[in-house]
Image (tube, rainbow, N blue to C red; front, top):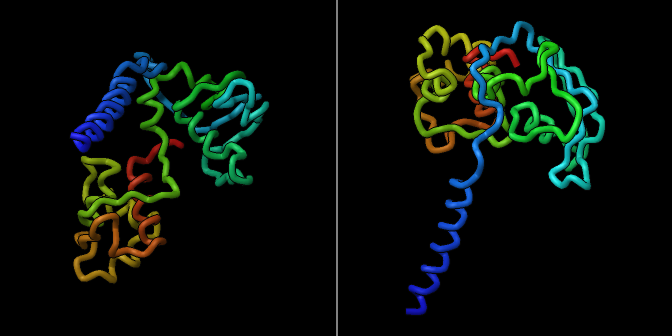
Length: 199
């Protein structure tokens, strides 16, 4: 009976969390506006944000990320680097200031359409137990053979893929255990760029 009681309490706490998620309000930013990004320039203008309103992580941040140029945001742990990405993806809204994409306030665009135009490769790479081809094509499920090959070539995967007897059809095991850390990153990058996102 004591074992059942512990299981019941654990199940109850999990149920509470699930109900909290189901009761959460719908994501903001749904609109019928057609989403087009001609250039993909991102501007943070006087952006202020904090998870706690009284302790901002970002305070009056001004930053321009130009299309076609590599920009690096460097700082110590907790400086707000990941927060900038979370704001761009609209997981959070700034307390004040603006995030502009090609000069337009990003909050006027449909949030799903916005995210389709952004490629994100996180530090913690997640690959599936299928083939290299399947892992790259996961970024665009209707990708053609040529698109998969072009993405692999663009992200410098082609060289190490050729070393495998089965090439793109090489099975990489759970989490990509057959690949080195650098190879995993390149496959993840190829998966991100196959959609040809603007950002």
